[in-house]
Length: 303
Image (cartoon, rainbow, N blue to C red):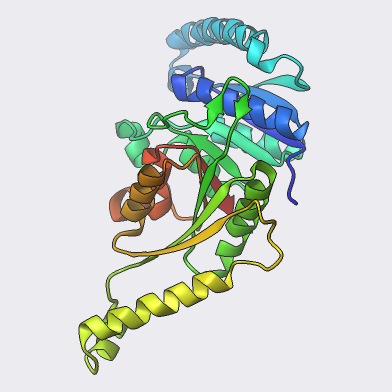
């Protein structure tokens, strides 16, 4: 069974960030993991190039860091972190770079962080910190969005009753499935495996031309169900119920729709690295789910 021994939770003191602390604390307590709470101070680089403004920039930075340290101290003293082995980390630089650097230095097993959902203009072009971290991290990242309904986070700790794991049959899907099975066993949760059959590609239309379209669609669905069922390992504990589900349509929409319908507490999915800019213009199943999911999303990298 997979375990988490060290967890990193970056903070920006926003509401999603504070929710993320709750999940990080609960998981740390559940697994007996050491928790690192990180704040990254971002320099006002644009002002340093103007000599007259350099002093003011440094003053603003000191004021912001002083306020952040007070916020961090308040969180560290909160009741939800009592009894947990933890350590604050304060660094300075580009947030996503500092987060990944600390994760590597501390040999972290899991990053837990909030996401602000649909970003502002600068995030549109540059990608949010969360998206950069999930796109470049070599370890799993648990993200908590503003849309998260909080059903899995309770006073007594995180309760995972239903887990949803989308599968696309690529080799990279095996790692998310491994994490899903492990979490399902740990929390005795129901696990739903979902594969979404998209619309016909050009090559499939060529094949479909020799068959009736409804018959060809039925063949695709039958094959998807067979492949999905084959991924369920033998010897799964009886308390871990696994339900394969095949749907047709847009993958992101179907994942979000099923997540809402089942009131799942966690979505576990793989990520295939692409640039945030490309995802914004051309779309990405992972990025859409990350922003709009009604529950936390555990992103598991391909390697």
